[in-house]
Image 1 (cartoon, rainbow, N blue to C red):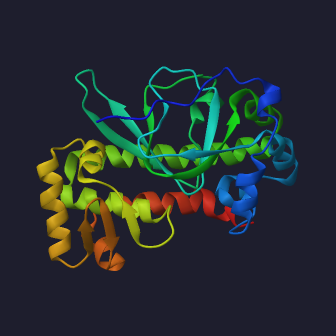
Image 2: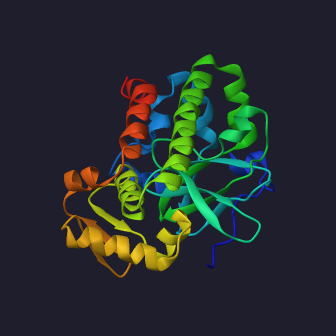
Length: 267
């Protein structure tokens, strides 16, 4: 699969980063204020928010864009807004599997807060949209000086770890149609509406299975009147039924995110 070249470069100077893309933000404000574009933004204290605000850069995140590769120095932390990012683990022979998904509830690049500039995973945009990024050195400086930001990001990291471990169990023990249901539901949670743009090729990459297996699972869900699928467009027509079709992994992860983050993100 061809993937977009990563745009995560450390060559940008601090002065070049000290701006907000005003045209993009003004367009987005017609829909929602900037702070509402990502739930971690919204949960930040006013002090933390004012410190990072001058350094936020709006970015387009097209499908298959690689935000980071294994062992690559993370020059930026990404905060998806309408985009959804897949965290993948790749094997030497080229096979890969999705271990986590991040959307407007979180950030991409938690490794920098763990005293590490890189990780062994790959971050790839699986559903195109928009987002924001902040230079790692800037947000890390605020993180090191703010107990409230530390608590917020550590809570998100704990929820992310739960998602990774539960996904590992799911990939090993559950049927492909159950895994597909989980992927669709987790995507819907991070999008508006009931339509998802995912090709069978992309789903096969995420699940680490052959495309024929995805085709069979999608046909099963469609025959059960849970989804409609056509040319990379999936419409969920019965979300309740899809939740019943999914394994318990979806609810386990959803409840953990609610336990760790919802209260903080609604205050």
